[in-house]
Length: 354
Image 1 (cartoon, helix red, strand yellow):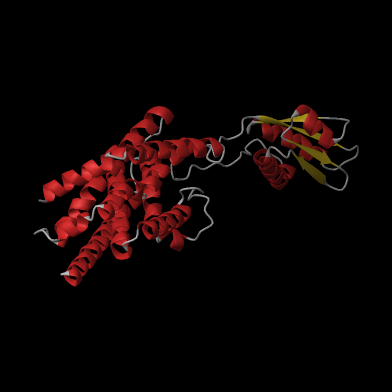
Image 2 (tube, rainbow, N blue to C red; image 1 turned 180 degrees about the vertical axis):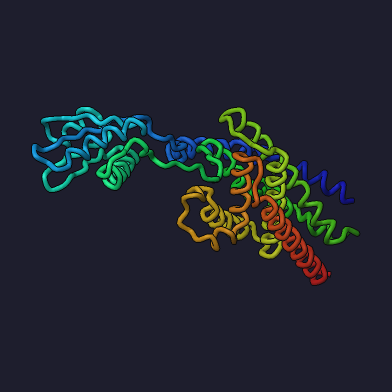
């Protein structure tokens, strides 16, 4: 009997292929918009190349020796110091595309930085400080800009980020595909027919959940394939990423099935489901990247979508993520708890109508 129920539910869902098609097209469409809109937000940082800095020395300035020392120190750090005997510093920086300008006077010195080269300005300030601390006593040939290569999270561009994140967001909206099934159940009183049969509440629940999970998973699978082919999204660890998406679909389906089982209202289910998914997505990085999110870690850690999003992004960039196991536990807990509640509510409602 449960096989007949599953088969019948598949037929009902495929009678409305538009919902299934939307489930494939919507993630691609939304991803393309966000990838284009935020392409500059996640651009990888590139260290500035060698650049030139202008300087001038007032006649009689006691800092003339410092100016000469700066010129020597710059040779080993990719900075060329050019002497300008006339002209306004701001105009010279703009006209010759200088990384900065240093004006030495009798009282001290003034640094003029380009508005477009803050990194170069910081490098210039460091060099002047280093020269002042060492050049007056003599040798400046060993002055270098210190560099480190710390271990950081792998960089990710907007294509990889939103190409993955939006799949998770739509994986949490299975109600799109399940709406047709639920409406037909009410219209044709299918649940009443199942309940008068020998099917238990668990079998009735599985007969409804399995088709929805299957159809949504196939839709997300096609969307994932197209995102890789069209946008060139990098998946990193494909097996772990696919598992996270599948578990997300399962958890979202059981959650929304629980809401529907309790409310017995399609409208209420849609409103509550989309409100919950939007809030979780907003906090978890579906729109504003979780890297730049202003939400505290306690807020983000409370949403399963954050752990899935972060795990997928880190799997894409590094091939591994500490958030993968957290996401799996979180999704499994949601699936188990919501399934138990749905079956329990179905059993209680069945007894009340007996």
